[in-house]
Image (cartoon, rainbow, N blue to C red; front, side, top):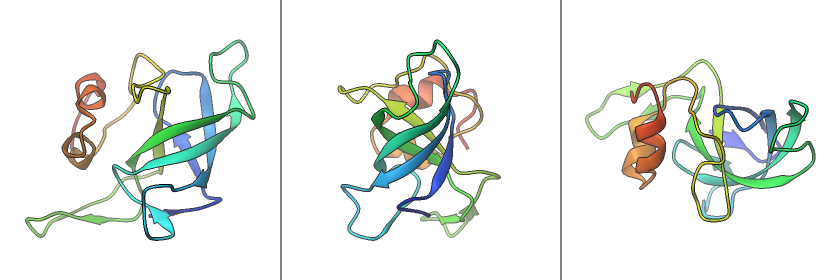
Length: 121
């Protein structure tokens, strides 16, 4: 669960390092969880990268510190909050995904992210 104004790491090679969540358009609650599409602004980015500091992007949450309950009764949680930046067509901005992603992301229709990720947990 990541609230509005919360920070997250970027789990792709788009050049952005840290983002702030400024909107959660499709969630009726006040926080985002794994698989939600959010609106973010880049707070820290590498120089000469496609993602520039201050730009606004859509992103999908792939990891959260807060545990997520699965339908079989198990829970999964990660060490950090992480997102993957998306372009205007809903495709990943980067070409690689860094670190594991949750299975819930693939179940939400982001099969391209699941295929790029080194591990789906």
